[in-house]
Image 1 (cartoon, rainbow, N blue to C red):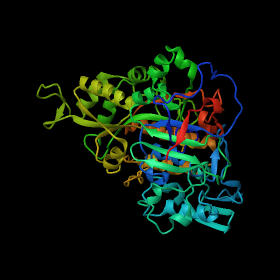
Image 2: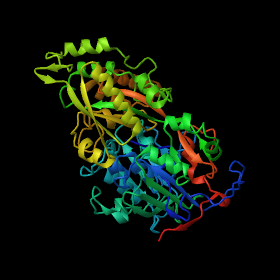
Image 3: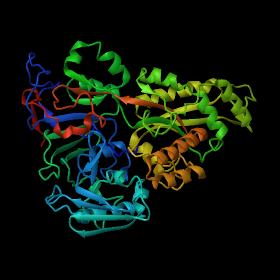
Image 4: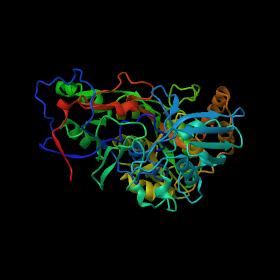
Length: 550
């Protein structure tokens, strides 16, 4: 859910009517999609999004769909470049004081919002005040509340001071999208109509939002970072991956993330698809998990959680759901990075161990119906997930394995907005299958610290471990990378032992992009193929024949 996104392929696209029914590009069969074309501006790029955003103020929405679109509308002070190094975005430069407690940002001059109003340090200060306001329902506030003082000496200077050196400080300023003070001052950020009709500063501005259909963006003439090549970006809301794929085959969308079957079997078996689609593979900063509501029985019992962990065959899920295109996970960090503790291994598939732990917790099949029970109550619960085929398939495999040891688990699949609003934010669930998208900094205070359990915050499973709290607090203020590594390795070890979640897999992103889209770096740099999407372009001979929507 969380996303300080450094490489987003989604988020684009503004709509046009396609003149022919199939949406075929007006090119002859002899057009060579693989030959080079010079870069030029214009055209419309269309993608598919599995969920419709609840709003376009990312700090409030707290979801990947909102972040994907908003990342094209709003800027942050800093950003990560293609090599995952911090560089300025709105900030022209920054200085850190000798005691490491104060950061002074100097903004680029003459920046404007898309409505033509000046963008200054007053907007940055206003955004900081909003994200730290106790009335703002955001999961991101904790990072910015550590700032003891924020000030604007002049229109191009923004300065923040901390009580003590804060290791993730620069990363947090790469994650906060700056909002316009002149339009939002005095409004309730939680309910403002601005979330549906935003005014931003980035490459694109909102053209239209059709409920249940699409969001369309068009180039922002006042973009602070210069002009993007593609004129319009359209994101169509298509929850079902199979339907997305049919639209891709029909040339009605230009890009989507494939599932493993589409990537490994369908496209390679069809030469005509290989001719028109570019396939990419990248391991992102995310993982899929099954999480327990620790405030609901029996999940307050560590033995039950560990038993379920042993009862689930994670490799079966990786092989069956991902066709092997995934990695096992034993810590909440990207495999292969320094923050991922190499000594940790996933819970092995061990039915005997699972049954032993459940028996120790008081569960046996007393009435012979095949379902374990304790004090006359069967061990049964509901697994909730959203409309995501990989998560649905994983839930089915989990359900089957749990039934084998006498646990009755049902599955309910929900549309994203109702899933988050009705169940996640209210804590009204037993078990969820979800995913986390993480920032590049290892700090996970907002997800696992016991203080982050209010509605709308990220510790919605109710995890509470005093030692983990202590480690998370220390890790935020430790500047030595080696010492931070030791802290987060211990944190991950305790988390694995406590089993508040069952790590299922870290899947590969498998984007397919129509070859009419040019300017894509291949092989992908560390930040992923989407790092330079503003440089992508669609040569005129390869564009769809289209007219603007009235």
